[in-house]
Image (tube, rainbow, N blue to C red; front, top):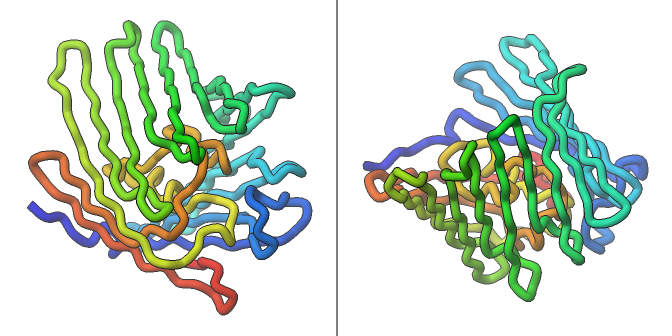
Amino acid sequence: NILLALFAIVGLSLSCTTDSDSGSGSGGNSRQRVVSKIIFEDVEYDYADEYAFKYDSYGRITRVTHTAIEDSYDEICHYEYYRYGSGNGLEISWEEEDYVDDIYDATLNNNGYLSEVYSEDGEYTDEWSYTYDSKDRLTRIYNVYGEYEDGWSETTYSWSGGNIVEVIHKYGYEDYNEMTIETQLSYNSKSMDIINLDLNVAIGGWFEGLYIDVCENVYWGDGLCGQKSKNFLTGWVVDNGEDELRCSLKWSYDEDGYPVE
C-alpha cells in the first residue's frame, strides 16, 4: 500500500536573523544565519505549531517557546530550556507556565555531542545512548525505557555523500515481537551549512513515522547530535514490512539562497 501527499496540507516556514543577541550558531561559515522561528502549518485544519528560539553567546540554544495556533487563537503550550553545566553536563526541561513537565539529564562527550540522556518519573525511566563514527557522524541510538526497562529501541543511521541516506528503527518489549521500520532518504544539492539548525531533523521530529528524529526528545539542540546532513531533505520512503509511506518535500529559498518555506 502506498500512502501519498503527507506534505500536501503541511508547510514549513522559517525566518533567519543575524542579530548578535541571538548567537552565531554552530560552524564557521561567515554566511551562516541563525534560525529564529519555525512554523509548521496544517492548512486543512487551520492549525499551526510555532517554535521560537533563543541562543547564548556561544550560539547554543537556551530556550524554545512552543505556541499552538488554532483558528487564530494563540496558546502557549510549553517552553524548553537548555541549561549547560561547566563540564559535560546538560539539563533539558519542558515547562508549561509554572509547571515543570519533564526533566532530562544529559551527558556530552568530549566533542560536545550527546553521549547519554536520562529521565525518571517515579519508577518509569527513559535512557538513551549515542554512538558516533570517527567523523562525528551519528551512527546509532539505543533506548531502554519502562518501570522494568523492558522496552527498547535501536536506531541506526547510514551515511553517503555527507547525508543520512538510510535509517533502520527496531523496537520491542520483553514479551513482544521485534518490529523493524526502514526509511530511505533523498536530498537536493543545496548546502545546509548556511543555517545553524538541522531542519531535516526538525521535520523528522514533527512528523510521526519519519524515523530521522536523531535527538529523540532533544532534537532542537543545535549541534548536539554530531554532524548534520550536508544537504536539504527532499523525500523519503518508510517501509514497516506491511505498508509503504512515500513523501516528498519542496523547499523555497530567498534570493541569497536561504530557506524560507
